[in-house]
Length: 79
Image 1 (cartoon, helix red, strand yellow):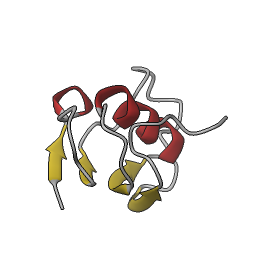
Image 2 (tube, rainbow, N blue to C red):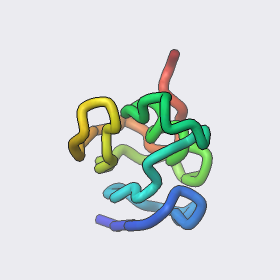
Image 3 (spheres, helix red, strand yellow):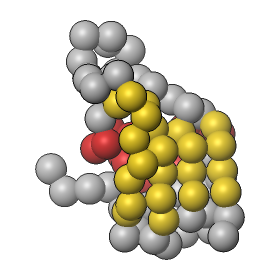
């Protein structure tokens, strides 16, 4: 198990399967909510090695941290 903790731009590109994402905004607009899809997209932009795993992010709409399972952290989720 490989662990990463940091801002999206500082995540490793290699094997990682547990991520604590410290980035809480993806568009510099505090009025738009930051949810699991936004967090997954930021992670997929950085992680190149396909692997299942978990990530923790802060959901701004719910005002709480959330734990998410992804079958492939390197793949953007469908819209």
